[in-house]
Image 1 (cartoon, rainbow, N blue to C red):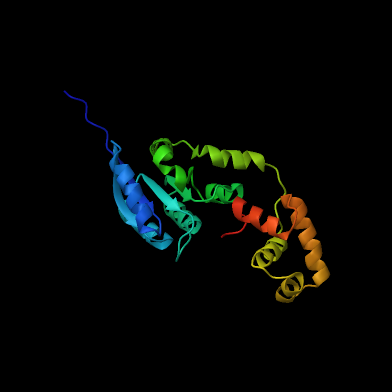
Image 2 (tube, one colour):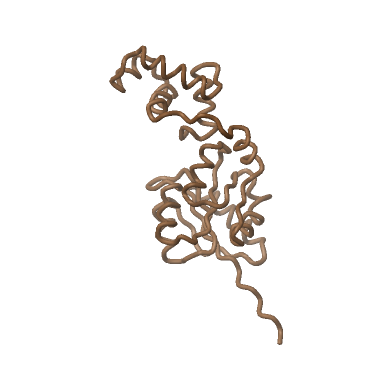
Length: 211
């Protein structure tokens, strides 16, 4: 008796860019043993489709309208603790990666490397293993043990990144300008930044601030 072929890995894609979804669908079409079962354009759709389709692996963009990818992963995990989730992003920041992994992702892929890493990532995550792009691993290693910004420092940095001067930041947060300066000094030290602009650049790159 011939052995029964294994079932294909059923994949759900969630990304708000139709062209990227089409591209991923085309790449998946080249792989044996994998099949695309659905596409979602935002996080809420992803949660709803997951409930309906129960895919084996879900590819989840982190930056989406209506509901973010992180929130969608948390919702899916609450519904199905065994869900296999791969975070997709343009950014290799260590903080963003940690946020996705805490939300339940066991895979983390950069969109620029999908053609090269997608199959290995899906197979690894489907098999119960973790898959993180080498570039992201390097970021995580580079900043391992670095001191996190406080909630207030994050508020200050977010406003500074938007171009607000210290006085305006203080006015919006109802704190003194001198206090803003003190927070900025702490932020520069924690991030290893030269100045305000450099701090904002680092924060976006690492995923401390959303672009």
